[in-house]
Each structure stands twice: as structure tokens, then as C-alpha cells.
Image (cartoon, rainbow, N blue to C red):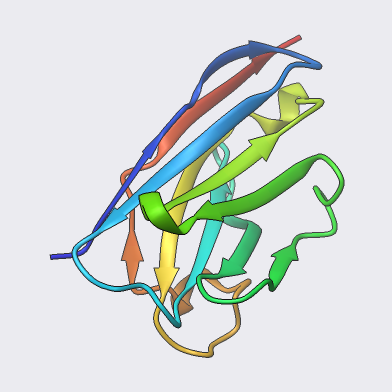
Length: 124
């Protein structure tokens, strides 16, 4: 049974940083694409960043490239999202997801597994 468990969210002041973690279990994720998405209140879920579990490929939404960095620790089966220079508009629930195929990484409907989400709140 595949499980994705996010952690690391919380309340932070504008300009601060957070590192989100996504612990993956239940299968081998070699060949998978792991993504981070977010959903703000009243808005649709949107792509943030993704990476290939194998290799060095990373992908970012142009909206956040430069402030957010996605990475992984194979030994811990964990994917991270480092978020710097946070803004109040970054307030959202952040989700980790796994995409088993070579499908477009930026589309949430291509992801097979999802975590429960972690709340990030940025105060002004």
C-alpha cells in the first residue's frame, strides 16, 4: 500500500523559510515522478515542482522557480520542498504526489498517489 506523508508545514512570517518533507513508502519509486502541488482557499490546485526519482531532472513552475527547491533523499525515501522568501500568497495546503508514468509532470490528473497535505500559513 503506497503512502505519502507530508510534514513540515506551519505558520511562518513573510520572508521566512520552511522545508516540507514527503515520506514515501509501500513500493519502489524508481521511475516515478514526484511532485508538489498546492491549493489555496477558493482556488484550484496548482503545480509547484517535481523531480524524477531516478536521475537529476527537476521541474518548476515559473511562478516559484528561484524561491522553491525540490530535492530527494533516496536512502530515506523522502522528497523535500525548500521554500524561501515566503509571501502571504504562498499560504495554501501543500500536497505531495507520485506519478508512475512518463506523463506530464505539471498536471495533477497524471498523479496516481497523493498525500493528505500539510498546511502552510504565511503571515504578513
